[in-house]
Image (cartoon, rainbow, N blue to C red):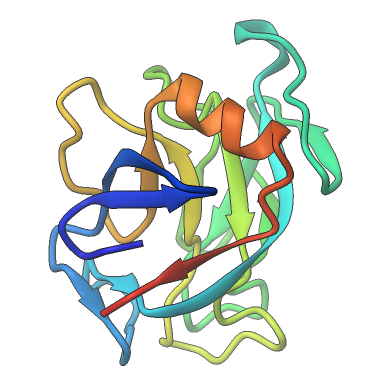
Length: 159
């Protein structure tokens, strides 16, 4: 992974979108940066109503309208999946756009989560124009499906 939006995978160079604040080693909640480091792939989430079940080397789980991710550093569920509605600030995973139709949960600040260090770092579907993300890594849908099917185990983000 390079800060200029290139995703290197088994000798291939794929276009990628990164956080609009670039790549940072000192990631903080809400800074819009993609964290630098090796981010292991934890599991894959997908919308079963919008495409085939993705192939992946990690557990796969369908999402539904009540699925969310807590990004509230003051809540005990910080950086964890939750059911909506939820008392803490959360991001809905079931979206009207296609960005989270397929997403891989990346291991960032999750063993255990430290409040404020950043949450919800995903590898997900990019916008058609590859607009910057809020801190995630995004690929074209076909590229994302391909790297997951070929056994992606993690993402190395260089800062």
